[in-house]
Figure 1 (cartoon, rainbow, N blue to C red):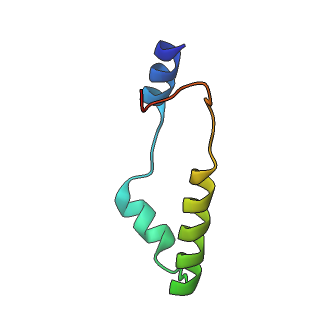
Figure 2 (cartoon, rainbow, N blue to C red):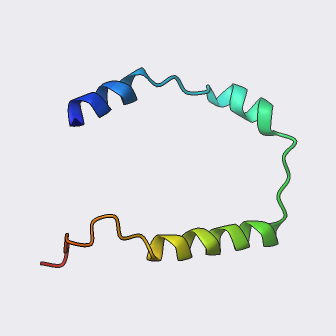
Figure 3 (cartoon, rainbow, N blue to C red):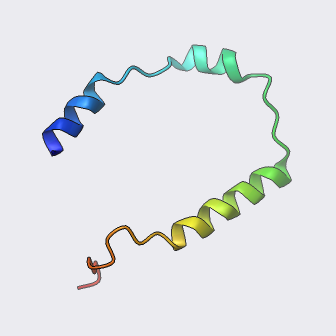
Length: 58
């Protein structure tokens, strides 16, 4: 399973940075919206329990 995942990741084709910047240069997000998105993401990650049986503190 891990090898399969590694193989899939190795085949991914990303977008070159120059192309990404050209495609997104006109996007404008208000600072308040960015703060709300950041807060929502942080709150969501506090609630993630994918493997509740794994205790990393031990």
